[in-house]
Image (cartoon, rainbow, N blue to C red; front, top):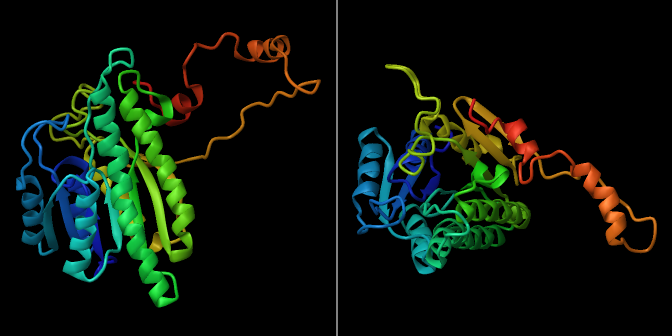
Amino acid sequence: MVLHGRTAVVTGAGRGLGRAEALELARLGAHVIVNDYGQPGRDGSGEASAAPAEEVAAEIRAAGGQATAHLGDVADFETARALVELAVDTCGSLDILVNNAGILRDRMVFSMTEDEWDSVIRVHLKGHFNTTRFAAAHWRARSKAAGAPVYGRIVNTSSEAFLAGSAGQPNYAAAKGGIVGLTTSTAAALAKYGVTANAICPRARTRMTEDVFAGFGEPGEGGLDALAPEHVSPLVGYLAGPSAGGVNGQVFVVHGGMVALVERPRVAAQFDTAKDVFTYEELDAALSPYFAGRAPGENFAAAEVLGLKKG
């Protein structure tokens, strides 16, 4: 019960990854605020419903844990404020924030509508910012009042779509890349207050990814699904726990019993001009041979290191 006495907010916790993460944090002893907007469509369509969040909260309580359900759209600034306030008012403080809420509206970039772009950026990236903003303000105020660092953990949900590209998901890939930038910036800003911020890139078979992973690594009868959300939640529990106090500003890929730490981008090659500034001809002579023979647009490093290609 390493999280006994701690309070955790998990967004998008009514189904899939968020549900598994909420159950794991509760198993480790945290009082979990289970947030979900409860819309039935993975594209954010349909009427909001409190049922998914309430069902997970009830499941946690039935197992002997503590949980409070919250219906709300965290992409709304004031709803995110109310969510953090609910945690503080209910339990006295907020210690852990796991951002997981998201939707999908996939389309090729040449066909995507403005609304399809805006809605995905709003739920994923703005939703992560909103809750982070109010949690960060809470921890900063507590630290200043105490005159010392406090306990704070943020776990954000990015995706390998930002690492290697995803042709039919320009909105989703952009949002997930933005979440990594938000995470590393937050990690740098809040470290002095005792708060860590890390991001995970999970592979999991959920409502949002059922077509993406259809026929991919499906287990035989009675076998263990390598893409089950339960493979991801232990890492979230660890990053939320006291042992991860020295882990900050990191990005992890996680699935099926594997955790990979992603390196910050490195310079692959450097080209220097022989004069004061480059000319077109000089750049052509330096860069064109370097890229000759490579498939345009293929992210070799991410595909090879992370094994993103099927098979």
